[in-house]
Image 1 (cartoon, one colour):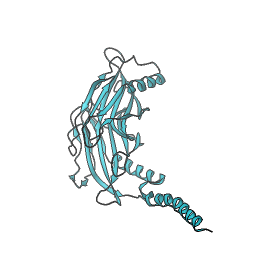
Image 2 (tube, helix red, strand yellow):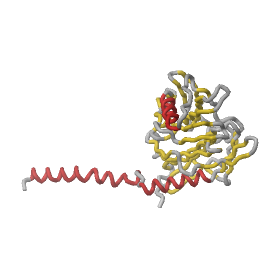
Image 3 (tube, helix red, strand yellow):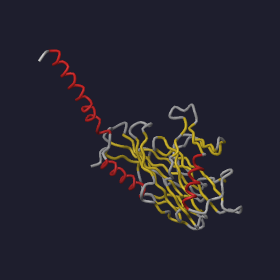
Image 4 (cartoon, one colour):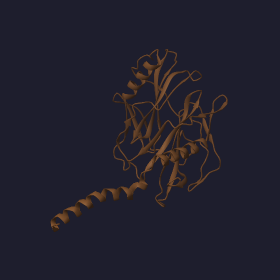
Length: 292
């Protein structure tokens, strides 16, 4: 075999082997389906450790929907962010939305740091209770907010709610598409429009809360929910009507427009405070990066 042919064969072997070697070297960064399911179980356990209480006329322990309404990743953010979102309900209506997520620890690449974030979707005070938990920032406090978590408003020009469940779903999806969520420009950690997930994350009705039909929508970065949009058909003195409400599930300032007009906005979230409708506690705990 001529030296030229030997060189060409050697080069072909190198080009063939190199991608495989690269895949092997990086495969620890891509969790297997089994690992993803084990992490999902971790997130379910973390969510179930909280007891959420709605304090209206009588104290009511909210019901955790045990299956996440969304499992997500965020390729925009560093250190391999993934997690799950949950809701706690009263007579079917979501009163609290929360996200449990984790990132690779910057101090120890064999471990992942878990963080917790919640937002009240209730008009009543919300209190949380959990076992005493120590974090690098000190004791994780109970979340006790006396303020309404949302401010529902009539959707301008919204149609009357349709008589059937299927038609109302079509209406809600169309109404949601008329909203646009924006991260203001000039921020070092993100800017631009967020993407609306076409399908609602959770659908509900509630006779006690006079909700004919409702849905939880999300504006996302990657698939990570940053802004929660509630759309509800409710009974009112003017008859049934569509209302919306927005909730922050991000540390970033956010803006929400409806058909080009600003209808809601919020400032950058303040973490590690327990008396606001938005509660965010980074680095609550850590786990081994690869769960066996």
